[in-house]
Amino acid sequence: MTAAPRDPKLPGHWTVREYVETGARLQGTPRALVGPRSDEAMKRLGVHTFATQKLAKAPKGLRRGVVLAAALATDPRCIVMEDPTFDLADDERSYIAEVLERALAGREWVMFTPSLSPSSPFARLADRLYVMHGSAVVAKGSANELAARGSGFALRFDGDSQRFEEDLRAVGIVPLTLDRANTFYVTLPEGTGTRAFFAAAASSGARILELSAMGPAFS
Image: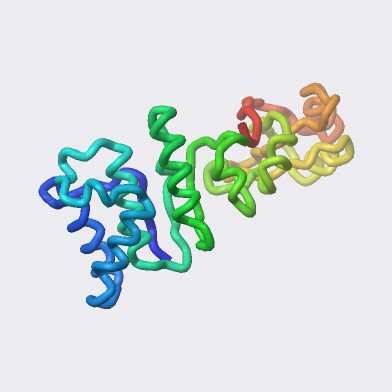
């Protein structure tokens, strides 16, 4: 397994090739394979035509492609990466996503991203998606399953959490505990309004202190 952070600090005086080959060597790639694997990785990520360019002059999209090429050059079983398309222009985002889709074919990968659209190729390619709030997983499933969940809320309350949870479940609301005391992540079933939260709270003797919209679980 190897990691590909989104925007690590790169040595500006190195060329694209030097960075990719050094990454392969540091990960224990046999010396005889460093060159061939680096060439193949650069071609797969579409950065081979910039092999002699200094990293100091490389634009953001190219730098991210170089970091991914360095990870791919180690021939890992799995790549853990931050979303390389985040905050890029639309044309760059589409190009990198298309290239990366081909480069990752047949390889396991995990990607962390601040946001993801159902139309993203990564959403389509992923076996499973996880939505997190702090350290808590608040939703998981396929792209279609998450898109159907609707808007979510962080619900902070005072009272008996077990009784409150039971009363929420009784009206079809399944709360998930977040990484703050007496706080649930909740989504509303179709046709149910936020009054259901307050009705369940009154039934259990709990008092809602804060109700914060968190937007759709997947959008």
